[in-house]
Length: 250
Length: 250
DNA sequence: CGTATCCTTGAAGGACTTCAAATGTTGTGG
DNA sequence: CCACAACATTTGAAGTCCTTCAAGGATACG
Image 1 (spheres, each protein chain N blue to C red):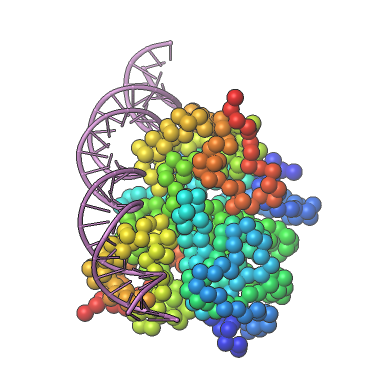
Image 2: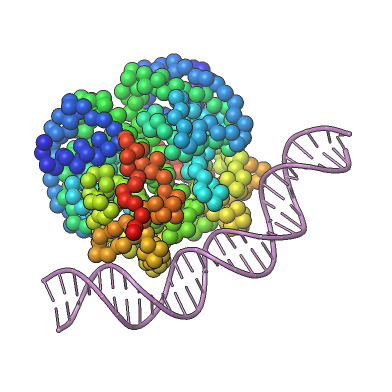
């Protein structure tokens, strides 16, 4: 199997089942490989892209900009994701997609995605399911943003990112690479960078996490998940084996 | 055409095209008609419903409850919507669906929806598109919630609801029935009821709206839309004719 | 080694919450 | 048609969480 497609297959298999035939259809998708420098847009609000973007390596985010210059980050994406899959059926982008750090991506023409869906009903349904999970994550973010204090909301985001990275094999034991600045996290949480810093300090002081040099280590999953009121049901993983990456810190 | 299905057809035609054949498939969907009293759940978090709920008359909302007893409303639904369409491919409900006021609904078995999608590719794609627009609305709410002050956020919600009601023929001129209490609006905005009241007063004082006895009248769409930074692109209507229901108040 | 970026800290101010009570509205039975 | 109960809205006042502004300290990179 081509190395590039491996993460996509792994991602899809974390949320549903693929047959040999479906995998073959995926492997035959024509890809346009690209490198995106940090900060570059892969798609911009108002555009009508003819292709979607498969993230192979790095982190991406989707965002909107508001009148006063503020930025709201809507989603954070990990390798294996197709962040703008929705543009296959929603041709006009209502937000932008950007590389959070230097990224490797592959563009897939909408035409080819249509063909793939036509060849494999199951693959089409799995892609639909993927976009539905995308929506489920928005709902969870809305809830945390509307009804949770900053530190709990931050803890919730960290729980989610850790599980999603684990699902595609990017978490080793209780730690993972997480190259997000406080400003990026702040824009995802709807907070200021200053308050994000203070919230991070709370999580560190409580012994939930270490987070330095872009490396996140979860020291006490259970207490952090309780603090965040984190329930992974909304990620709709195929097997609920995820959700307990490590025990208490000794 | 059966009266019940009319609003669904109208809703779908506001976001895409239906052929005669697609309409026939819709009309033949077996429906279980029900009346739901205000406050009743049509589906609850954790459940695995075997049917989805088509709203025929009234208002519904989707929500999550958090630990301290707070409620976050994730979406407000108008007649013609299938609020839990996603449960066709996400079998476990990650949130609850309830009647905001007394409602008429029709339950449609997932099995029958699957059959309909198999009979009409176009209908399947339109339903996928509908769930994608559902997600687009979450993104917009996330942005307003994270980066807009309360009054602007409230104005944004009112703009959205008015256009969506207009799209299914439930707004006459510049006014519509909107039977939402301040508590419901507050839970949708992530605010307290008290602050929601004060924000409503701002919109009234500025001459943007009247809102009394469950009747909303838009007095100055242009200034309110500007205040809210409202751009209807995210609703992905088929024709962009919507978005200007009335001129300035004289 | 200097520059740019990111993180940390303090202090003042603002937006929103909570609590509590008064006022208004709706529906129901006498 | 009035009285009453239940519910919804309005108002005031005190307190909290978060923001903004501003400056200093780290860390990375050419």
